[in-house]
Image 1: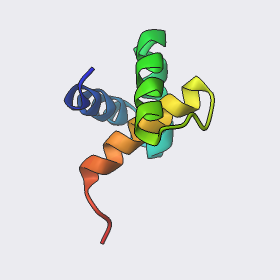
Image 2: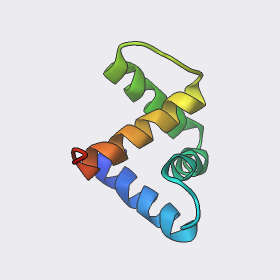
Image 3: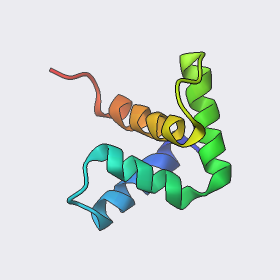
Image 4: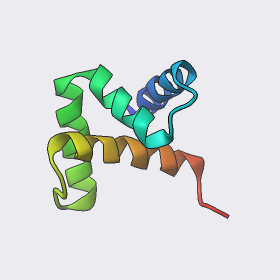
Amino acid sequence: MSDEELVIEFALTRIDHPDLDLEEIAALVVRRMGTDHLLEFASRNLATRDELRAAAFPSAVEHVMRVMLTLRGPAD
């Protein structure tokens, strides 16, 4: 899955759940995507961080958050 596809999935999930914070939305995205994508996201997180700091699910959520925050740009 490309980052662009992930952004679209995140945006659609956020539209469905506007009351949730970003990390909760990221967790929903990972749950909805299934095991294959969970492992893909966790492995991307491992490649980016060069270490596995958590179990697969939290690591996958961290990857989704990293993609979303990177797209938002630097904080002022």
